[in-house]
Image 1 (cartoon, rainbow over the protein chains, first blue to last red):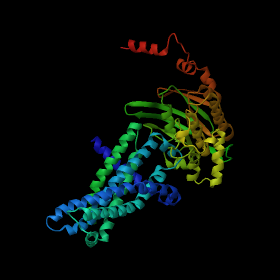
Image 2 (image 1 turned 90 degrees about the horizontal axis):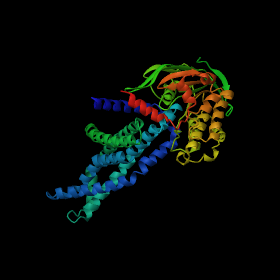
Image 3 (image 1 turned 90 degrees about the vertical axis):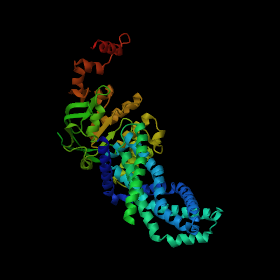
Image 4 (image 1 turned 135 degrees about the horizontal axis):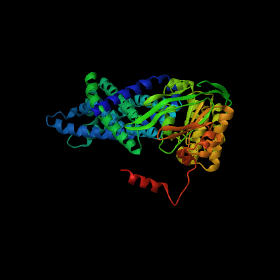
Length: 250
Length: 274
């Protein structure tokens, strides 16, 4: 019962934060510097790890698909499998998981520290809403940067698959054949669908992490607990939302 | 009560209205623990009201209630007749709180900490804000720290920057939580003088939570003594000095008795209690 109440409270406060943040949307042009700073933190600093992860996801996908499809003489279609998997599912999901681990945890830690050390109280007495200057720029930044991260993840993942397809002796598929199959089966709509999923995941991750950070009470130990909770809740939400958003988009 | 009087800030020249505060039958519980028990008092516009009491008596909790940072379990707090928890109240009344630990924004340097309020509320162009911020820093003798981050400041400097940040807000109600703790005697006297100056020349309403007897007895119009969450005494400094209540006498003039230390007496009392 206590856990259910806690979950319902969490949902309620998250929705309240969302509505509150949106009510300050008109202030966003004046917060240009904060928005750019958050774009840098959410997008630019996450880019290298997204690229590395996507490259190896592409290679593993190509390798596994190659071994499976080689058995019935369809290894020429590895490109299509890697292309579709990266664009529709693995690109958006793995990028969002990385976002939760890298950016979400940092957001929660920062806001929880601000809450514990009374900086949020100071903002309240100054009549400067935290939703306006701390949450809104982050939400706007993730909406702008998520598609960029997904494009990079897809391209690097596809490239990783082509490297394996070309250089692993068992497969030996030329890049031309690999990308031809990829282009034939992976449509622009698939990439857009993946981006839409990533937008939903990224937005939810940042919103949830902000809310958990802003509702932290206690001392340094609670900051650590809040970060753990934020990452776990984000990962669970990504997986649950993945099913529903995929169902909606297909 | 709860009326306003037109005043002018000696530091910034801005006009403002001092506001009154009314605390009525305030009780605050945290779980099974009752921190404030049916506390009632009123603070007149422009008054310096000092709240004293032993550690853990609920002074800071009371200040948070007045600042609108916490919900009362029962009873009401009004600032100029309005609920301090509402954002609409903060739009009408400029209320500043000097936190005990400073509560400076760690991601901003000292200058930006002070400039945040006027920038967000669009109080003048950048040149006017700069002048206002540097003036407040000069008053508190921390102008050299303008480009430093809070993590680079000592405890006393953090406190002074926190007061400077409050001054930049040109507040009508200024709440201080232990403004002179961690400060050397000269700086404590300076802070005390600043609080008094704001009263005499600007007439800002000040509520000060402190253990500093010199501050309380020198500048307070009235002093409230909180004991175990209850308002034990409420009166002028003269009335406080004349009090015969042994708890107040002991609190204001604690004798250091090395031969018969207090903690030993407490140990004996605990043993005797069945």
